[in-house]
Image (cartoon, rainbow, N blue to C red; front, side, top):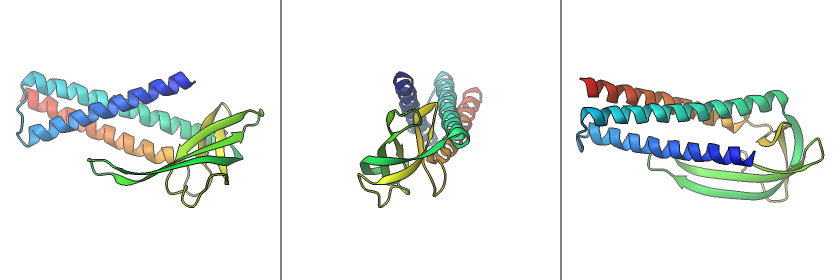
Length: 181
């Protein structure tokens, strides 16, 4: 399963980079810094659709994992083994604290599982060695979420990814209309 997760992560990062290029192209076209030919505009439209597809697939995967965890998840205690808190500032406008919490726990079959989640709001005040309540998916024990205080953070991530996918479709329509008009 590690290879599938790694491949998914590569696709997501590649999609994010492609989306950044599409947004830069849109800004450059709108501010008349560059002028794209009809072929260039169509290529930008195709890249926008590709971005929308990658973002939509990622959103669906996160939502599916959160739903599976909500329906089939088991609640257990986990021990925090590391906390990584970083301040992130992205040029597109996001800035804030991002906290990755790594935990270890024993699943129902007796296996020791190392997993993690990213959620700054529910990591505040936590320390290494502290016990926290988590929910885990018995079919994929590394799929976890903290219990209490707002649900699975992947649901919010899926919402924003879906919203950005809709935006990418809008950008694709803009580029396509400009190429034919």
